[in-house]
Image (tube, rainbow, N blue to C red; front, side, top):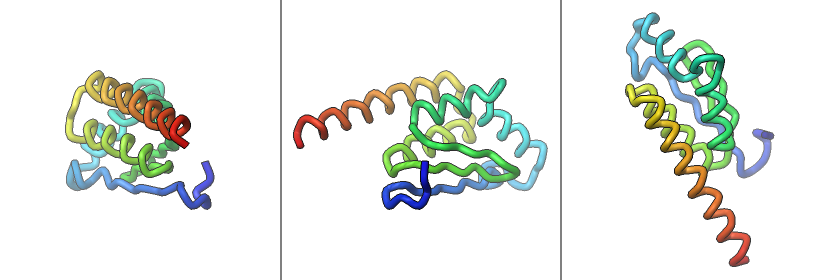
Length: 109
């Protein structure tokens, strides 16, 4: 994805807004976002059509407005303690909704 494109945006999320300054909690939250073998991060990227980077205390999300909102909500859910399965179901539902929206736009002009 090219950040220089007019319809691509960058969102930065500071993990410390959810954990405070406790570095142990920051590491735990990074682990929740990355998942085992990077699977959670990969699912967020694939289902939301975004690029996701987790480094230090920061989560960076790059994508279109609609994609960015879906990924941002998923990250927020995980940082607030939602179960991974709940987040995955949310992402699957949003992916279906985005596909339907794209299809409607193609068929209506």
